[in-house]
Length: 81
Picture (cartoon, rainbow, N blue to C red):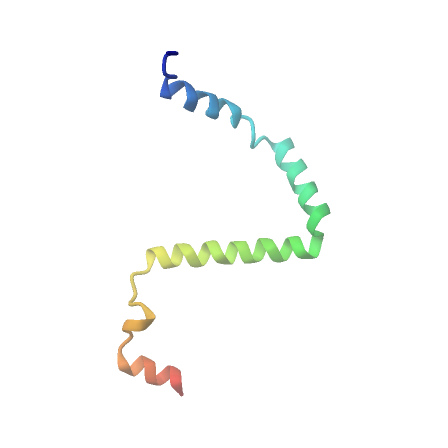
């Protein structure tokens, strides 16, 4: 029976594989490919919606306001008007 691989070796190899992924030239190539695939207008819309989604997620994670089901009655009546 072959010896079991070490867990540390696998994580080291995965880290080494992604080590130089975010170099400026790589990011530039990814941006050019995305520009060719989506076009300049659509790429701007995607970036805007992605930023708004991240902003809403952060605000939702930080905000501890009540859920819509547990709103006080006065807020529910204001929304109905």
